[in-house]
Image 1 (spheres, rainbow, N blue to C red):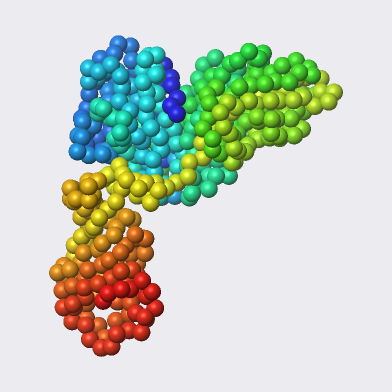
Image 2: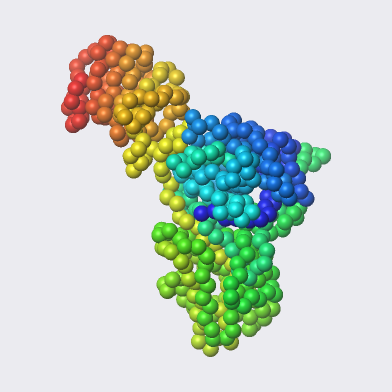
Length: 509
């Protein structure tokens, strides 16, 4: 599901004058050759974050500078094209990809392709409708980094008829409390909608941070207002329906909320008169049947006083979400961390008895809860989990002593080996390990012992003519976790370990 905008101004990384830890956030202007700065916002070229693809300029008139270039990937022999971004290991990040086709290749419609983040398929990119309406498209996901780098990849799929492309890539570090009810070791959050109810313009931007060195050698972080809205650079779209709109008279403190919504998210609201119920069709799209994270924000719109409060109940599709919610001028939020939704969604606000004013709602966020999994090979767009039966790694050759590279033989669908490429060693769906005549010593094989547990499909391992030499070598027993064979010419001594008798699947030695 894509989100669209007519105009898009992004934000920059904090400036640094000496080597510093991994940046907490930055924006890449894909395909650009130089920095672009507007006010305190800076966009940097994507060179150095990706090693493949070509650059192209967009000839569309009156397009924002950040949308005036793109990077495209014409190499059809590769299935996946990856950006590698420096991050803080374990950090929580908002990642946004932006697309504006602009007919850069002379075509009429943009291509359709997939997005993959840290090996998990994130979504399919289809910007056709937005482009036809003169708009760019963006996609967002919130993930926890698995390492000190984070990969964001574009991948061809069966619907890709031309070159995948990208206009901008943003990443923003989030605070620990933000969306903290989600277990980011198992799930990611994919943005469905983030709306400011009653607003007539979207909220874009954050404060600009700089790290400067003083005369005495100390580092000082300065904060300058650029677009003083969302400190995490989240985009809040306007939402207006047939319900009355009011302006709120009190500025809330963003830091009082776990998710740190910007003050401007509370500047307007949807409401109704005394004794009436509000019904809102939001988000305004049909949702696939799955679980969602939902956060709703409320504030009594009147000037703060002992009487500026109201009570009402919140339900979603007829199910109680929060009963008798007391909303004051200081604001309040309620959320559901795993709420099942399907199709159209209706939010109902029902006033309490004898309350002199009607219900009110200021903003809302909704995210699809995406289970992590479906990981892909580092340089291949094919998923690795057994649920994707079209991938079948027929064999693997593991060179010695270099443990960093392996050669993967993949079936072309007819049972024939058709491709041989180097891949970083990872959790692969392997049926055969071929270690014969590779001069692998016992210490090297010991390092590989722990790796084999990641190969649930392993059927046989060939280890003939190596340098495994040990009396009563327990390594052999632990190494043979499946259908092992061909251990001849390995200088083995002593008796056969009794533990081999415990390998129920062993058929040949």
